[in-house]
Length: 405
Image (cartoon, rainbow, N blue to C red; front, side):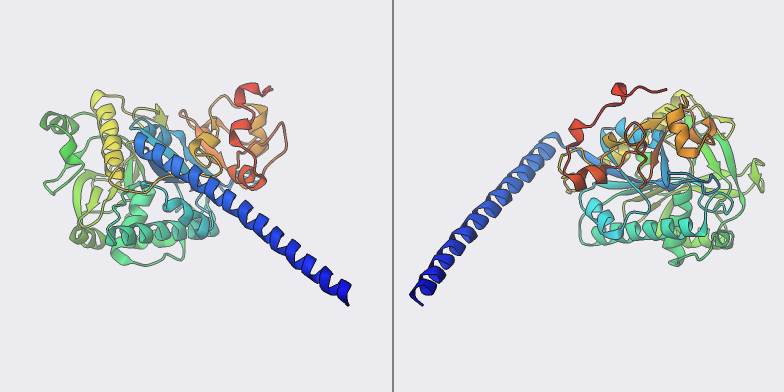
């Protein structure tokens, strides 16, 4: 009996000591983590880093046996980086908790263009997932601005159209074909001018009077859309009540009906939401798109850079701080490779020799996918794997160290 009591006392003492050690270890880890985060915050604030998230577009479903799930033209990245932003690609099919974790660290969002409405190249599942993500982000942005956290968002082409439908109709489309209920099958493909309206515009204010005059005469923007929102349409009239219609254009015979005056940009009145039907990211970084030449005039380059600078200045008003993963640059664009026209057997493996330079584009493209193929290392970079395994991105093998066939 005495031995048992003594043994119990010893066990209790040992248990207490172990608990103290565990508490000290946990406390040390918490202190270390807090110190790491504090250092990152100090550096971020000191450097005034601006992080912008870009939502990727669903990859082409008609290309079978692909390890690619989404993509993003590199011109979007270059466009934002030219204005000093740190880019964070956000895959359109990320789970909501992961997406929310990113949104809380970003200073702004860019929604890109794509052909999600095309039933031949994209499935209904892709469309619904993308729409769900886009609406989730728009709801988040509206909420943040409502509580006083200035949070800008930029919408281009396809996202311009979907954002307009969301803001005016507040519905979820059940099928891709429903686009035709709200949009008109007409558009432009190729270089164009900008016809600014007299409505109040923050973007317009960054240009000089001379530049605004030149925009009406010289090729300034690149259009690549086959749907539009006519100024006099039902959705166009609804949109004009909640947003300033800042520019209009006329449809050509390149796609659908000709001669329709449509909305080519708008700015929401009570929120920092900026939407353009055209592609300001293309002129400085691309040369040919859809078989049409991208404008390289001085005014086209100036317009592109000034719009990028404008959006980054808007994002600077957002107080969020980028933390990253185990390392500061985890999950940023630095974790991914650009695939260009120099197609190798390594990239062809992604599409079983079906990938072409037309898919890649002359500016290159970023490819994303959850499946990792063990062929001379991971073909598709997936930073989540590195984080889960506790590995440092800094130790990853560089592209120049790989022997490409």
